[in-house]
Image 1 (cartoon, rainbow, N blue to C red):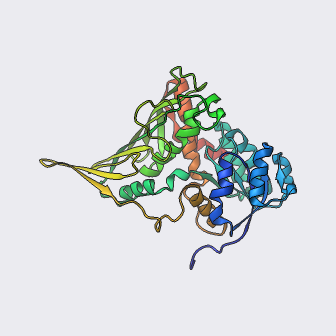
Image 2: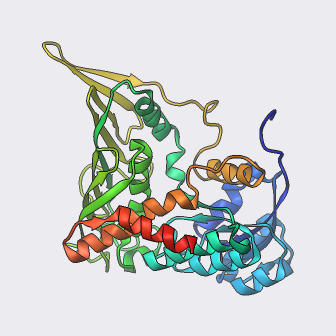
Length: 367
């Protein structure tokens, strides 16, 4: 496009082949295959490696069950990482050591310490020049959220007073949340779910979290070994507040994936999004009562690619000289700090200084 980045063909190493990574390979990369040459594929599961490798037409010598072997063998310039969070740090550090740019699934890592290490590795790579590192916060780029965001950005309702977010899904049956590890891990709701919603609160409000307080717990549900309910309150740096409710044991109204509930209370009214995907503006007029207006959704012409595919396109544009995307590591470290601040708040029963966590991570990354 005139004035846009000059498109190039990028040599892409894909770390992950099964589960969500299968969707990357078969669906999310598909709109971009004129810009991407997948030169290697890694997965510890031979069956997943065969299925995705065959789909891509990769020769056997480009398929690896060992991540180090893949990085040592292929010639790439960028890496897609879609493996469980404990393996994000070694994958990013291997890429950083070679100066390869990275697009990684959220959360950044399975601990705050590894998240900060990833941040530092990305910033210190290439002799301090750094690599490009973007995190896959795909929930920002859907019609329902972009419609809500457009209302807020218009300024029609004035100052944001507070944001309410809710995720509720019925995972009371064993293995009902897609994969066994989610039912066996610690902090399941926060690490696997709330990182999306914390990032969304930042996105919608246009403000960063300064402090967080609340709890995560398991009331004794046999389908989960770890914590599966979360209730948190946040102070934001623009003067607003936020409240978040997350549950994998929701036995009533469901606000599951891409059907989350958000309500933003502003000085001139409220704007609400529920599982029907309709954005509604609510304005109370004294003497006349409540007026509700349904907002036309963002169209496919305005948002031609959604979710993962949209983020992959942003990443490739960035590699080709375009502007940094919204979810680069410098931004996402703020959402990641909310996640691990929430874990700390629950463990200690105290309010956690999220802004201080971010500031320390920034200093550590800068060396």
